[in-house]
Length: 107
Image 1 (cartoon, rainbow, N blue to C red):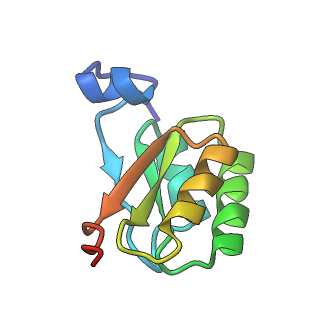
Image 2: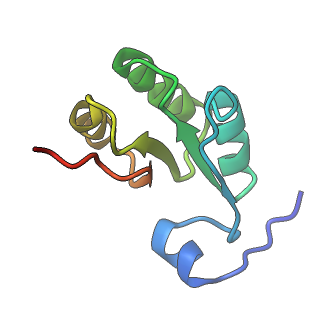
């Protein structure tokens, strides 16, 4: 494995070594994949849509136990508990969030 760094706006913004994003894919992007991507220098993104809030907190902590590198969490903006999930990632110190779908219009 190389220690090479490719400097781009993304790498500078989020603190990764390579401008590669391993996106949040439900049932696939769990703690093992995310931490492996982060340890390789990419930005790993944890998929949270298939998790309960408690599982999300546990998964974020597991990623953190496997890597010191930056990583993110993908959230569904239209989820009823999106606010709770955002609070979890803030509380756990996750610096990057990505969002799938737009919030539903409220009547």
